[in-house]
Image 1 (cartoon, rainbow, N blue to C red):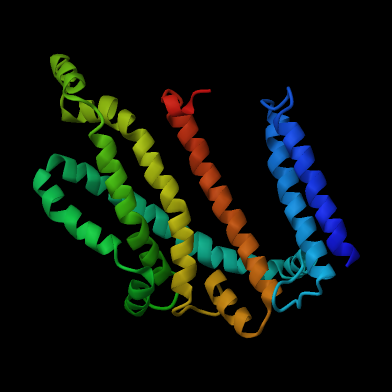
Image 2 (cartoon, rainbow, N blue to C red):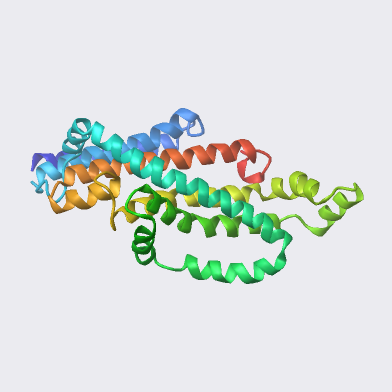
Length: 281
C-alpha cells in the first residue's frame, strides 16, 4: 500500500512541477518545451510501476514497466527481426508504393477530369471497406510473406494520399493560373512552379496520415497469416501464451517506429513548406 501512496504524491508533485514550468518565464524555450513532455512521460511510467506493485496486479493482466524493459533487453534480436519484417518490408514498402502511385494518379486525374468522376466514387467505396475484411483476401492473393502486408498497406494509404493531393492541386486560383499563362508557361511549368508548391501542405498532410495507417495495416494484416516473424504474428502468439510483457515490448517498438516515421515526414514538411503560414512562428 505504501507504493500506492507514493504514486499519488509523485503524480501530484510532477503535475505541480509541470504547471510551474508551463507558466514560467522560460516556457517558450526549447529546454522547457522538451522537459514538460519528458517529465510527464516519466511520471506516467513511475506511477504505473508503483500502482501495479502496490495493488499487486497480476503480470498477465498488466506487467510493470521494469518487467517490460527486462523482456525488451532480453529479446532485442527477436524484436529487430520483427521490426524488419513488419515495418521495413511490409509498412515502408507499401507506404512508398501506395503514396507514390496515388501521387502519380492524382496528376493524371488532374489532366483528365473524366477520371475524377469515375475513379473517386470507386475510391471512396474502397476506402470505406473494413481492413479486417480485405486483409484476409489480400493475404490469400499475395501469400503469407511481407508482400501481402505491403498490399494491405497500399490499399490503406492510397486513397487518403490521392484525395489530399487532388485537393492540394485545386488551391491555386484562376488569377494565379492566368498570370502563368501571360508568362507563356505551359502545363508542366505551371504545375512545377505554381500548383505543386501550393499543394505541398495537402500532400504532406496525406503523407503524415499514411504513416500511421501503414504501420497499423501491416500489423493487422499479420493477424491473418504470416511466417513466424513479425509484430502482428508475435503479438497474436504471445497473447495466446499470456506473455504480456513481450506484447508490450512489441507495442513499444511499434510506437517508437511510428513516432520516428511521423517525425521524419513532419521534419521534411517543415523544410519544404517553410513559407506556409502553418510553419511560421
